[in-house]
Image 1 (cartoon, rainbow, N blue to C red):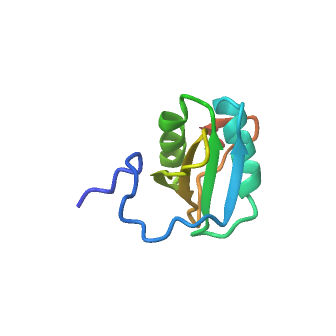
Image 2 (cartoon, rainbow, N blue to C red; image 1 turned 90 degrees about the vertical axis):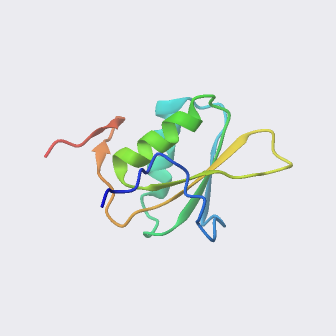
Length: 109
């Protein structure tokens, strides 16, 4: 049996009501991920996070980062009154730690 591909949105998630919303408006990839990582540090496993972003690379970066860290990418979330893109993810119980200044690089053992 193969492991599920975490880069694809989980369209079977029954509830994507956010436990936390992160405003990443105006931030590009690294700044967005640094803010996201800091904001989710205190949340429990299973928490749902919505990320509001204007970064055009977010549809690629967020699933890739979730795949790296072990969080589950839930995909885009419709927000009809918002001109920013909104994406959701569900936190894992044991994320892969990344370097403090480089969210794309796992912490060396």
